[in-house]
Structure formats: structure tokens, C-alpha cells
Image (cartoon, rainbow, N blue to C red; front, side, top):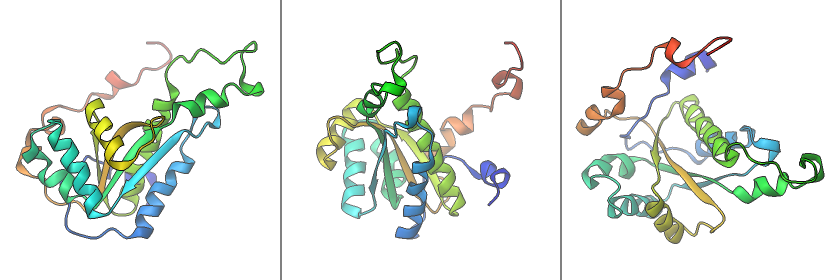
Length: 202
């Protein structure tokens, strides 16, 4: 699929059909993350792919028990998605890289203007979303509150030095459930191009 065809098809999907997603499809989708940009080629992005029913059920349970949202809203979003991908990042990879001789600034690690480990996790996340569409699938994104991340860390064995940034759900799309009609996409207009992009000077 050409990029100009792919991009308009990308939207947040929160309901999935009971259609299996092959291991090969999942591997191609998550494999794109190796091509995502990273500061200094630090490559701090990490993914945890959960496809088995027990693991996906646990993810949904943790989100629901933490009171992140109305548990009824999670059905059918998290429980219907055949693939859950936790997008994570390891900050230490960036510090390790920028303490190498070719990256030192007057002998010291740079003062990070923004935490690029999160910037790069966002780039990896977008790769997943576009790759899912390229496979003829759909995807959605959920933030992961700190208490949910802590519970997931315990449940899924995520190391302490790896931060959970977001959850991406992937599968064949199904008609949106009723509650999706009141979500942001339906209630908020898309900003005009001139509100988003400036030329030459602000």
C-alpha cells in the first residue's frame, strides 16, 4: 500500500472482530519498530507483545481493576483485541549511548532538552499503527496510568528499568460500540491546517 493510501485509513479502533491475526502478521508489524528513529541510535524502544488469551485477559483485568475507565467500556475494546502490544522504553540506553566519546559535550553527557526516550517510543508507536493498517488490520492506543503500569509490571514481569509508555491494540476492525460515539474523535473537530503548520516564522 502506498503511504498516501495508508495514512487516511489510520484511525483509532476500539472494537475488533473475532478474526485471528497470524503470527507472521504480528512479527511484520512489530518488526517495523527496528526501523524507527532513535536519538544517537540509542535504540531504547522495547515492545511486549501479548497474544495469548490469558495474558490479554490479565491486561484487561488490570486496566479495569485500576479504575482507569468504566469497566463496561473495556468490553469490547481490550477483551476483543487479539493482539496487545505494550510500547516501552529504557531510559538507561540513552544515557549509556550519550556517555560514549563521540556523543560527549565538553566531556559530559548532554543536557537533554526533552526526554528523547519518550519521543522515540512515540515514533515506534506510530510505526505500529501504520504497519497494522498496511497489513489490512486496525489498531487503537491507550495511555497507561502509573498505577496500571505498576500492576502490569508485576503481572507480566516487566523489568524495573523499562517504562511502559502506551498500549496498542491490533486486530480486524468491527463496528464501534455505542460508547465510542462520545469519544474525542466524534466530539472534537480536526484542527485547520493553518492552526497546525506554520511557515518560515510563527
